[in-house]
Amino acid sequence: MWWAVTTMTTVGCGDRFPVTSEGRLVAVVLMAAGVGAFGTLSGLVAAWFLSPAVKEADADLLRIKAILAELHTKARAQTS
Image 1 (tube, rainbow, N blue to C red):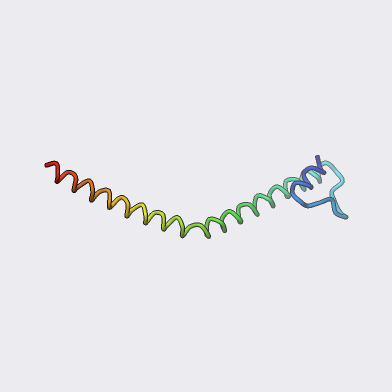
Image 2: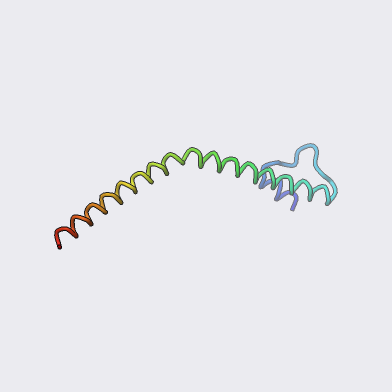
């Protein structure tokens, strides 16, 4: 199990490593926390890079809604 966790987190065995079960448990928790923190940070950076595209899409949707509302108003005026 120790080998699997160290391989998945790309820590590797290294020259120094915990020998006791308790030490390995603490190390696994620390490795998981490190991977989680890095994943959270990279997700925040990715969201920051992608946020302008979302704002442009929102502006496009507002323009489409305005055009549809105008067309709806003209269609009602023609049927009346």
